[in-house]
Length: 503
Image (cartoon, rainbow, N blue to C red; front, side):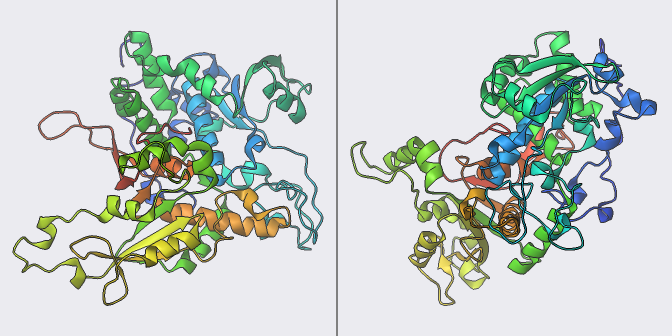
């Protein structure tokens, strides 16, 4: 035993389960990389496995005594990246505070087959309606079909602890929780119908920054035996093995701590898509005809509103770095395509091409296949065309004549990054197809050999999480400790270089 802790010193066996039983697109990383044994290590509702739990406070006696309640419909107008990032941050906070994460969906919606939707929630979810959502007549929505965010993802039991949406003995409805979220009353202690006393913390989008700020210092504190134990228990609730938890408790760098949290929730499979999502994303990706054996790179280029509203200063900083003065007329919503290319493939390595000119160069090889996801496809296509071309029509990306074949998604409407971009004229079928197209792009970017983008959009930030992995062996051959995480090849073209999970 660790001194002052109930955590055993023996390491739990880490297994990945049987990936053949999992849908290939149920999780953002391939099923073979998921640590499915987390479901067993954190089996909150199995009394025989109570020793697997990670804390000896009252939550062990009643896993649902402390609840972090999130109401995702408050950001249903945002894109998939924003909604998934909020869900991830909710999970990080719930695991740190030793609370069950419970998702409450908006029960109020209307649907009438054959007419345009009144709003994005008209079909019961901002993510639209798969064929599975309907009764056999094809027009009536199933009463038991998941609503809201739950139509997109399944919340694993290891983070929800199997807890239902609290009602406080029938006194708190969804509307009451929404009202509580909008006031200063963020925490409610009450008694359920079965006599259990529970405490519910309502986690809102507007309050997530200040709420996280309340705990930042504690999250990185390793100064006492109590703080070290608290760090170990948090890691265990994220799905860590005891060995990982001990290593995590020694981290003091703010960014290393959050990188571990991101990598652990990635490999724990926190984001698990519903089976109809996995099925239809696979169908969509198969239609893209990506290289099956050679691999591919990817780019995400976000422009327009995101850059104007949230990243204008970073864009101006980019232009200043290129020699433009403060008063000069430069775009506030535009970083040129050539800069992404230069950052990713501009370097010409002598070792790769031979210093004497006799070695085979990339001009004699196949072009790099690069998939581009962007909300400005027309302009980016023009920028691709402006690049010099090789004899086979591929784009030349550096002075060594390395070439790339840039490929775009099929249409601009299908690949909008905001669900609202379709407008109210779309019915929930069209909204669903748009959702699947965007999610397929997200999968393609996350699983590419190299990703080129930035962290000024929710997509860039969440893709970073899906490319963070744990170092299984955190000790090098000479006995020195290695970083607990490793990043799949990722090029940050501009802007800030280290976001937090969910922000």
